[in-house]
Each structure stands twice: as C-alpha cells, then as structure tokens.
Image (cartoon, rainbow, N blue to C red; front, top):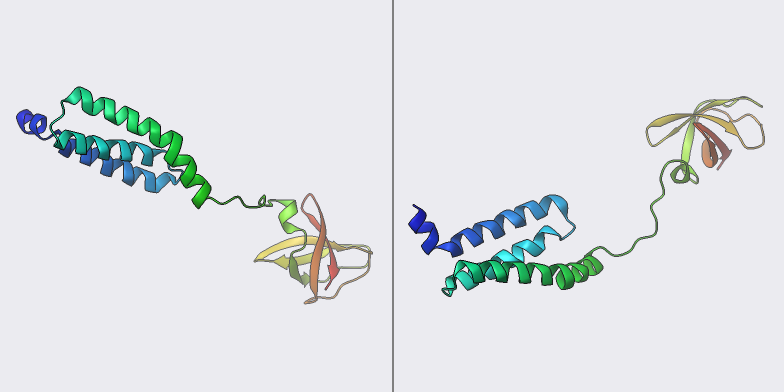
Length: 149
C-alpha cells in the first residue's frame, strides 16, 4: 500500500488540492485557495517524476506566490469595496413602518417595522393614529422617534 502512494504521489497532491478547494467554499476569503493552487502545481511536478523534496519545495513556493499575487488580485476583483454597512440605530433611521398602537400626544405608542414592533413617540409630541405610515428620524436606546410620511 505504501509503495502505491510513494509511486503515485501526484494522487496525494490532487487529493490535498481538492480538500483545500472544498475548505475554501466555507471561508470565501481565498486564503485556502492558494494552498490548493500549490498542491495542484505539486501534483504536476510529481507527475513529471520529481522527488518528494522538490514537490514540497514547489508546494511552498507556489503557495507563497499565490498568497502574494493571486489572493490580492482576487480580493480586489471579487470583493468590491462597499460603503460601510449600517447597523443597530443607524440602520433604523430612515426606515418606514406602520403605527400598530396609536401614539398618544406627548406619550408613546408602537410602530411595526419589518416584522418588529417598537416603542415609539412622535417628533413634535402630537398624536398619531393607528395604521398611519411613519418614518424613523431618531432612535434613543429602544425607543423610536417617528414622523408621519
């Protein structure tokens, strides 16, 4: 069995390359892909009859070059820069929703936005009836400040 693997080292490199490609599917940052490229080139070198030492050297050099040259190019091409993603309170400002429980004058009510129900008050302290469309203008902790649309 060991004789088979020593005479067919290219097969082991192919298996390593395929495993790296499968692992890359779970990460998506093109880091493991560089090792898959190194293993694929080592499989070609092994198929040409090079000994194990040269195969390992080729694997290390090609993987390092891939990390330095291929990965940055792929990241630049496929992961285009986007504007910063808003989260938490910043993401709520500007959202529109519907008053699910009327907002009392100077008091609070409830607003439904994207399936969530939030405690809310009006911007000027006026009453807003149920089922009126509103826009979020501010968020203090978990209380929204809204205005009619």
